[in-house]
Length: 230
Image (cartoon, rainbow, N blue to C red; front, side):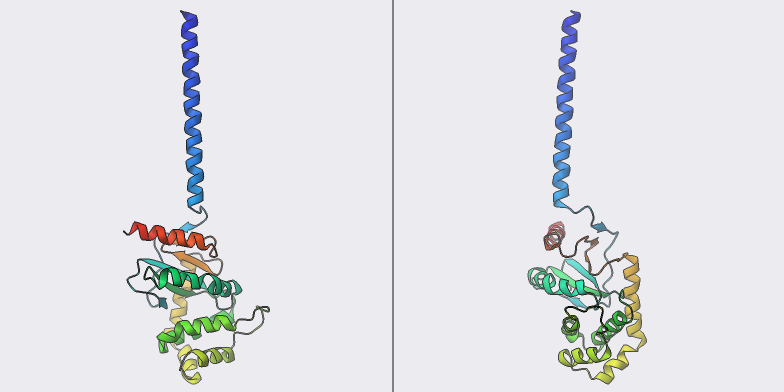
C-alpha cells in the first residue's frame, strides 16, 4: 500500500509540475506577443496636451490628436517633415481621422526663438498661410551645415515673401507683440510639462512615442485609438 501511495503521489507531483511549466510557457508567449504589439518605451500621460491656440491641420472633429513638438533649427525635424509627415497627412489627416498640430521647442537658442516667433506671427496675421510658411522655413534649413547661423530675419522675410502676402514691416511688428510672445511661452510650458527632451517628439493622444520615425507604430497607435472610439 505504501508503495502504491508513493507512486500515486509521484505521478501527481509530476502532473502538477507539467501543468505549472505549461502555464509559465503560455504566460511567456503571451508576454512576448504583448511586447510585439506595444512599445514599452512609449510614455503614456494622464491626458493629451491642449491644442487651444495652436496651428492645426485637419478637421476639428477628427477623433485622434497628433502633436509634433519641433524646432525649426532641428535637422531631425526637417527629416521627419519630409519623410513621415506627408504619409501621415495622406493616410489620416486628409481622411478626417487625425487632427495634427505643431508646438515650438527652443532647443537651439536664439534662432529657434526667432523662427518660432515668426511662425506664430504668421499664424496670427494670415492663418491660412501658416503651414506653407512652416514648410518653407524647414525647406530653408541647410542640408549639411545645420549649425550655421541661417535662421535670420532675411531668411524669414524671404520665406514669408514666397508663402504669404504679409509685408516685412507688418511681420516684424507682429513678432514683437505680447500675444505672439505669450504663444511661444505657452509652448515652452507644454514642453516642460510633457518632459520633451528630443526633437521631434510625437504624441498620439496621450502617448509620447519613443521613436518618432517608426511609422508602423504611429499607425498602430492611431488605429488602436480609432477602434476604441467605435
